[in-house]
Amino acid sequence: MAISTRHRWLNGLLAGTLCVMAACVVQQASVLMVADWTASLARQDIVKWSSKKADHTPEQWENARRALEAASARLPQDATLHDALAQLHSLRGQQLWTTGAVDSPEVAAYAAAIVHQKTSLRVRPTHAMAWANLALMQYAVYEETDTLFASWREAARLGPREDDVIETLVYVATEMWSVAPDDVRAWVEVRKPGLSAQLDAKQAAQ
Image (cartoon, rainbow, N blue to C red; front, side, top):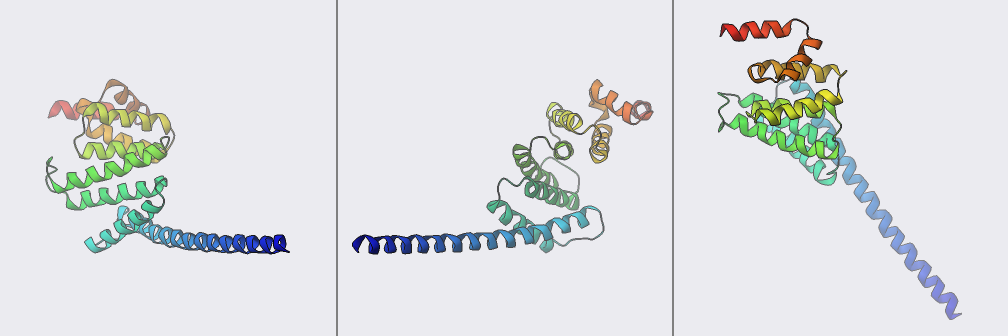
């Protein structure tokens, strides 16, 4: 009888523990769903803002930042959240752009973007577009040439047939043409025949 009572007590305790655990799981799932929903809305806004389909106010930008950072705090290994935060800070850099001086607010915004882009790449190091975006952000903050082209080359290696990657890398190479290494120039010429000659002529005329 004592054994039976003990078993019933243990079974009741186990059931109660499982109920508590289930409630915690449901609560956590609800929190994650809310975080994912708000982050999803923020990502949609970033796409619209980036494509110039809609303007954004400082308040909207701040709301998007808060939503993405809250989601990232709960899902720190989600590289897409850091990609979105990198894009968001890049948008701030574009919006604030004045002279591009090293101590300017726009460069500070791009520096914040770089932090998130590097975090994304630590989680997902084989994403070509993330490397291309990093090279673009490094160009915006006057990163050392060797560092910038290291990111550039990694993007080129990982995404040789990705149109968005190619266009981004061509843009960065074009903007950095005067210091672009020979392998970068050759890569551009293969994908954009004749562009090298145009850029060389333009550089010689300056």
